[in-house]
Image 1 (spheres, helix red, strand yellow):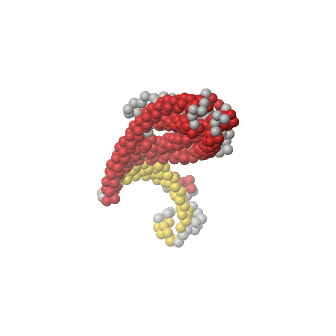
Image 2 (cartoon, one colour):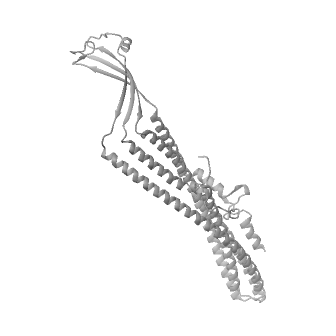
Image 3 (cartoon, rainbow, N blue to C red):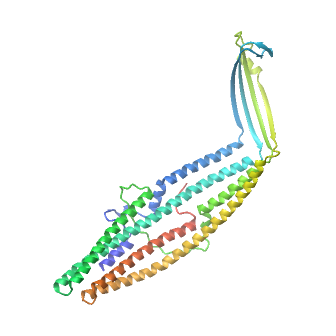
Length: 443
């Protein structure tokens, strides 16, 4: 009965830690807390955030193409020898200083929708960068979740191994007392000592495996290796009833990426076609100049008067009509093929995600059935082992047969633990396909 109470305490009370750890209930780390910490401290997530900011800047830059540009220029020139005298507009051998000042603006009125499609493409890439950030968060979350399950399984297996070692120790002491009374022989004592040594070795091995799994979890979380990380047992919820076609399938980041890539290829195709369209640009400007004869050192007019007298304005229009460009024609065909490839990739991704969802759902349902059966088997093995212990004490069972039933019970406990944790993992994967994401946060 004591062994049964210890097992329930491990599996149902919510406390699991590698031996040597001391933690209160407030210090326990459940799966969601580990996932949140890992996402917040992962280097890959930090890089994705910076890339998302760059994509937003690119979108703003593409929007700026519709704003007329404004340019200002100042020029200075000193001429000597034979050159044109600005005062008389004749050639002369003098040294002159010429300054020019201008302000101009221009805008592209029509370019075959290339600027508009470029803006749409930049905005789509900005949304895609956010989707990439979400996908990175989900990847970190799944990786953390798997390591959490492994660490939890290893820690609880170490506890079960410690329970079995303690059970073997008590049985060894009892066998020795029975041997002193003459009801058991030395072969039984030797058999129990060998079992005790094997269980002690197994307990140490499981402790080492638990520490290694916990270290791997800390590594994935980017958690300080010297700090304590006590893990909480997952709640054993029943498998939810899910629809045959989860709505979240169309929000899976991988499928969203395929959709965005298809749309990007379509924008590239439109931009390639737009290169066959005429381009119309408008411009306007104002300029003035200042002149001084350095040979005489005398300016005909002052700077202010020349600024006003030499002032001039202009407007311009430019129309460019492409007649033939062999490379542009090939670009259009290449863009069309890229659209076809993107459509095929998108359909392939959708089909793969649907298959993965159905497989995850079937695996979760199968694990739930296995868990119910393993619970019954573990209870039966527990009763059988308890009765065999009594038979062994009464001399009706050999030590080897008792060890066989003890090992069977231990394997049932381990298998039940494995199935329970596997089911918890599979439930989260099914929920991922339901909602389209594992980790939700304001990006």
